Image (tube, rainbow, N blue to C red; front, top):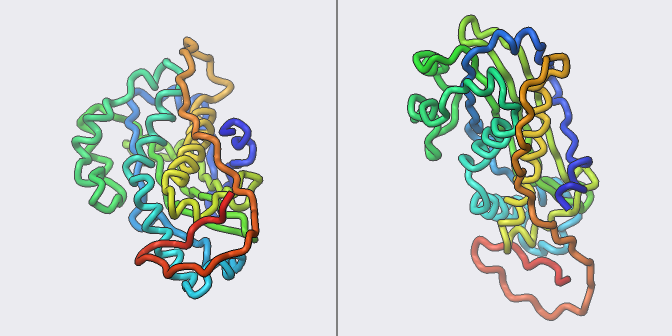
Length: 275
């Protein structure tokens, strides 16, 4: 199922953000890159399912859409941490790059995490770090991945996860940017399977699976960008396995006679429709 979803998880250039292709000559000048992956403060998770889509009005009954989105946001927080999101994007990109210079000379991620500890800790807002702290480690270039927003949306009753941000590469000496790739993946506006928000409310792991699929797609595009076609290829490593998200369960709409519904428990969303 994951493979079948990949064509629909198209990376779209963000409005107002310019992309810059990495030239082979620029990559040849890189000697010691350091990878940084972070999530901007306030990036998410966010839910715009119920207040932006009236398709769920009958299901919510007396529950206000804003409150329903707040409750869903709490469930999304339980599904996957900010650290897990940023690390998956970094690790899946780095491990799939060809084993040739400069990628074989990457600064040890543990040492990068040590010098940027105040910025990498989960509880601390992930503001832009002091990149100069990485220079004593021998780094001459930064490869940075930034998640600007993520969560769930819905359009005409079709809900899905979404993810927006950018990747870039710049030199530490002069901060000259040599590569930039904005990205936006939105399952609610693609042919990806509907991610039932009520099912997510009962099983938040469904959101984690959707995020995993999108992050892996973004990582693959980063790898392509960071491997210029005109550059002479190095040794071909074995392709590492990319974790596949389990099949998404597609709900079947059934409308049996409904008995009187009990009051919602505090903080909970309504039950999903039965299969």
